[in-house]
Amino acid sequence: MSHHDHEPFPQDYPQQHAYDRVLLKTGPLWASLIGLVTLIVFSMGLMRAFQLALTPDRPLVQPKDINPDFQLPAGIAPLNPEQVSQRESYLARQKQLLSEYGWVSEKQKVARIPIDLAMSLVAKKYEKKE
Image (cartoon, rainbow, N blue to C red; front, side, top):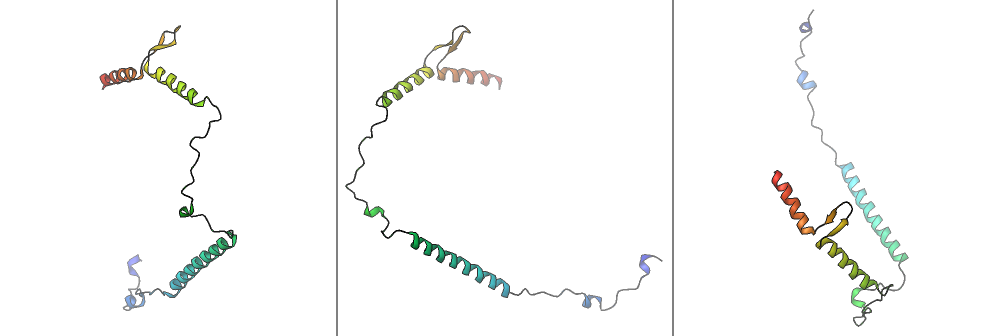
């Protein structure tokens, strides 16, 4: 017997096994949404209650309540009185390193050149390769 020798489909097969349209009930969906909204409102109320309970009795300072005549001191003295001069000398030394010629190691014949010249030499070197 081959697999084609079985009984034919019954005449009412499409009606017996037809797919019914299933309507989803919206009751559980609405209950979930109402529950979620209730939870959010309850948690916000609880947060507000804690905020009011833990806030001191005095009102918070608002920007409009700040005294406009109050001014900070003009200059706060640094911990090291020579701090400004040390910074200026450091910046001058760094600028000198970037803009002047000099020896990095005279024994190895390694010289320092200005940064602008160095960048132009590197650009020329790699420009030729392309």
